[in-house]
Amino acid sequence: MRLNTLFSFAGFIMLVAGTYCPILRPFHLFNWDVFQANKPYGIVILMVAMVGIIGTVFNQKKIIRLTSWLSLGLVTLFLILAWLKIHTSFSFIPFHSIDAFLTRQIKFKWGWYLLFGGPLLSLAGVTFGTKTKFNNTVAK
Image (cartoon, rainbow, N blue to C red):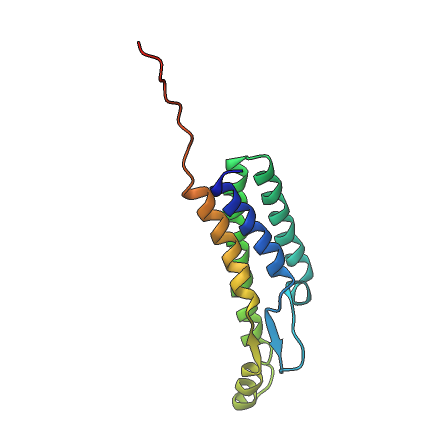
């Protein structure tokens, strides 16, 4: 296994591990992972990571590149949606100070680093990988 393929493989493994790490901590009581925040979306992220792992095992560069970009887009969209969900969850309360206080009680956790680091590492493995070149050593 070449080094760039190993980077892509490690990136997809990091993405799979990131789905089980805490990403949100509401009211300092418990931690949520991707599946507790949005289960169907977490399954989609996990399936894209599995397709990426299968692509690295079979050394399919186009599949690895596609799943790397797709997983980065999905994680970015998930971050935007989580931010919007946090900032609109308490908008029904007519008192803005209570709304702002409750919104500040939901914290982002360290799982986001793995969720973003995995696709970036796999994308780096595909982008900066060198192509094998055939050198003709036979004299003409």
